[in-house]
Image (cartoon, rainbow, N blue to C red; front, top):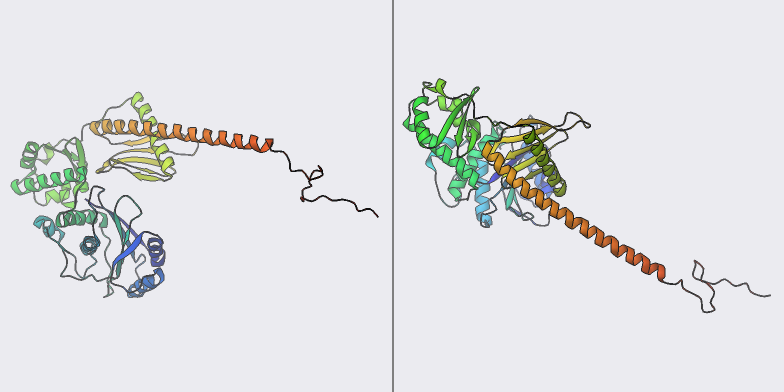
Length: 402
């Protein structure tokens, strides 16, 4: 499934100039005239004056596609951007996402071809990274003066991307496919069962274990655990309770299996934290997203989370600059930890090889500089024809006789 990052702001010019200040960029779609940051931002701001109460009228979404995805042409990218904005509510009416999810439509061109967008927007393609991606900038004030809601927009974005992935035939990473498999199993279970007791029996046959946790619900599937809200609102305890009777829910286990660890385990984790920090340092960044795990660091915390399930994470905190890091939260399953340990050891070995190569290059450069310095010292100072040493000004001063 493509990945979308959303940002809301107040400065159109700053946002657009950032997107256009690249060599490898292309405006592939817009309903505004103008090609410069000044011209486009003026048009955006003019529309947003229709509603002066909007504090953050700028909507900026970055959609990144799977590295395994074949190169998408501009026609498909424009259709995806257009449908994404419609799905997020930037049209004249909110789309029925529940209906679209059930239909699982496949097609060509734009899914919302018959509807028009009700806001100004521009789509920019960048070709400066390995992952193909596009940037969408839109105004959050419609032409009729109404505002586009941002309520639960991150969850909504995940649903819209799943719908577009199916419609446009986009490929999915392995983790996303597992999540979709689990959703399909739960959908079948809700249709076939009348209460939570029947659901538990039906899901066990599909290899899914359900746990009750505080006021929520957790699903165990393929050696991982997923909170209901990770899958979507209708898979939470409240969402399931809308279609299922509460009978049998009290028999559910109240916690997921505990991961027991000792002091030796903590020491190993500290080594892996150092490896994660070294990786961020080498990348010159505070956050890094790999194929399997993501890292995010701030002054007081460092978090490692699973890409396909952010609920599985390790979090360290640093109470004060002079105090050591403290393991604040650990929510990896046994299988996830074993996988993380194996991959971190590989990263550590790679970093060590890179460091040795860097030191070797520095030593080579240092030796070359020493050789050049010795050669310069051996070169004699320039002499004048008569054997008199030349002064700093390069001329010989002689006193004229009277």
